[in-house]
Amino acid sequence: MAKRGPRPAHERLKRLLVMLPWLMQREEVSVAEMAAHFALTEAELIADIERASMCGLPPYQDELIDVYIDEGMVCVGVRRLFTRPLRLTAPEGFALLVAGRSAMQLPGADPTGPLGRALDKLAIELGDDGVVVDLDRPEAADELATAATSGERLRMSYWTPSRDEVTNRDVTPRAVFTDSGHWYLLADDHRTGEERIFRIDRIMAIEATGVFDAARDVVVPDARTWFIGDPDFERVTLRMPTDMLWMIERYPTDSITQDESLADMSIVVLAVTGEQWLSRLLLRLGASAVVLQPERWSSLAAVAAQAVLRRYGVESNET
Amino acid sequence: MADPLERLTNLLALLLETREPLTLERIAHELTDQYPDGEAARRGAFERDKTVLRELGITIEQEVLGGDQAGRTAYRIDRRRYELADLDLTDDERRALQLAVAAAHSDDSWGQDGLWKLGVGSEQPSLAVAARVPTFDVLPPLQEAVTSRATAEFSYRDTVRVVNPYGLLLRDGRWYLIGHEHAHNEQRTYRVDRIEGSVAIGEAGSFERPAKFDIREAFPADPRLMGDPDTEISVARVRIDASRGWHAAGELGLTGFGTPNPDGSMTVDVPCLNRFAFHTWLLGFGEHAVVEGPAEIRDETIQWLNEIVAAANAGDR
Image (cartoon, chains in turn blue, yellow):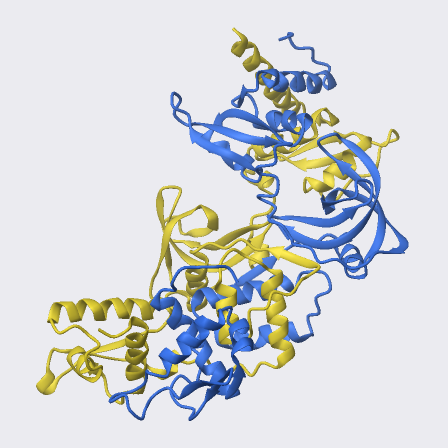
């Protein structure tokens, strides 16, 4: 367990109020099991249980919380005080609902299974909450999730927008996840021998191979940060209208600052996944966005615009 | 002075078990030596304790006494408001909730705090499927307002809005609030991540949600459809190249493809009421998509591109 400073009284109380009712139902639990259940060190747990055993009702002689520690076990004497758990707070209720509804839309979810029943029971406590989760799962997600469970290798053709090319590769799926409106596959890529993340909507075809690899646990990353700080990606500095910042909010930025000389303009430092990606972004942003750095990209937008104009039979003046 | 955890626990036990509301003097007398002696210091310490309990979701009822104690405030905790109802969860239902919280991993501890109250531990199972769900501090109070039919007041784009909140929708990785806005007297959609500061909740039961309200349907359709429908051209015909075009079209949210042209390219009708949204979509294809008509839209696209070229020329001088 990670080291940390002394826990403040309100944190200890919060944990104690969930520990006591749980303990009272069980009457006897090992210190190790209880500490693991409540994410505490054994020393923290023992300190809190001993402190609790000094609390109760005036005059603090007979009517005390009757818990004690004996030979590595946490024990309950007489069940009294704090026998029932505290109600869910609004954030706790909200988090459970949203987690449950999200999980119901993941591959393999069974609406008639235990999660569905648990959510029905929660609804009695929480009322008509009006919360709808719409994860818009692509068809391929289920097949990929099945392979992630079985370890089956798949052959897939995958479109890489930054190079605008389609490649075939053998992968072993490890996890399927969704983040910020997109679905991703985390897989072992046998072409490079490395773990890679693929966007599922860019997978153009999937074929089973009948080859199975051993299971391997993986950590699902946070899409917004996975390539921040990766020196492999070049940076571009743009000046663009502040009211258009929403167009880049899904891309990883190092910084967004107000332009010092022009009101309504912002300076943005952005990770670039490829030159073609950047030129498309500049076309979409239009004439009011300008590349400040690096210099070799300062005419990228104009060159891309001219390429499109040629499709309309328009030749513009050379820059 | 007593350990703060001890005092808080004793205060909570006293207020839960008492048969009658207790004044602060009485509370301090019962919790011998646990509160400071001076009246101001004692009041200050008690108020801090109340705040801690409130943040844990514990409501302390207070009432003003009559009779010989007239005018004095007394406190107690209503057990029915304190205790979680017995949800009667089975072991496999608890396990399913644990897996759900692990799968919908978010940056806060709310889910785990809730699980503990339901008797579920802090184990982190390894999963092959997951959804990262964004959370914001304003979401739980908004959900409470939706549930209790209370008005919600918040600042959005520098303006204070008062809304009858009908529901919350997570779509495309973003949270939206849909409700009836008072000042404009119409249904509006708000992005929750753009709500500024906190949300103030009004009286419960202050509105009725329309009986047939369905948030999925109430959500405004494609932003390219927004605009002024009576006066503008609403659809453009776009030809997308064969190579990656049909695939990219799906990626960019275009559904209902037409039939392929003999050269393999695809011609599709695309909503374009919102010209800006239309162009940011179109130009995501680079030179692989061309507006075929109407001429007015085609001219606007050419103008958009010419302005980019002109801006670069101006920058060179």
